[in-house]
Image (cartoon, rainbow, N blue to C red; front, side, top):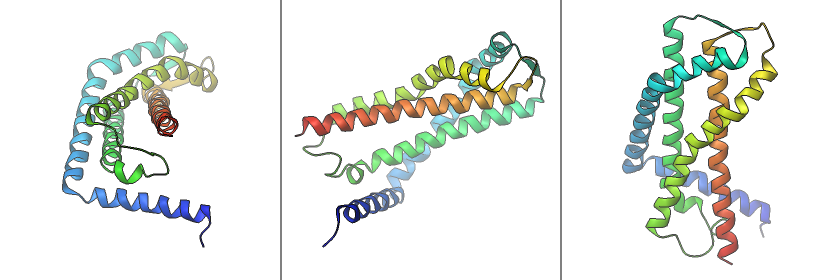
Length: 193
């Protein structure tokens, strides 16, 4: 006889095994690599063209801290790290989506599966929530974090500011996606009963 906690642990392990098996699938690997490349290149381009100049100008105007000039290689390395992190996040989300049938077991998703149109809409909303949550985090949370960490007269490099802003924005974007997924699963659980 097994306890409910043992059954839950077994189902969690089977979910992890299912994700591991899905990673070995050729189409899933190709989809994850494509998501990584598209996410990395588009983020790199967005950082180079529009985000970085705005970040630089807002640092001087909003915080009142002194900006220390760094080498261009530090800035390029930071932009590459941010772009690779976004690409990796999209690749992980692609693998999780492709293994959704194993992850959404009877424990979390009772009833019939969703139609392809509804799934496509939910994926589009989920992907769109990453930049929306990141932008909201940048607008509302980053100033609070910078005001807490930096004091008047402190010297910051643009790379330190970029790392702080990127970290807070990324956490805010992922939090928006997690809240959306939680709401969808909770709503489906109440509607399916």
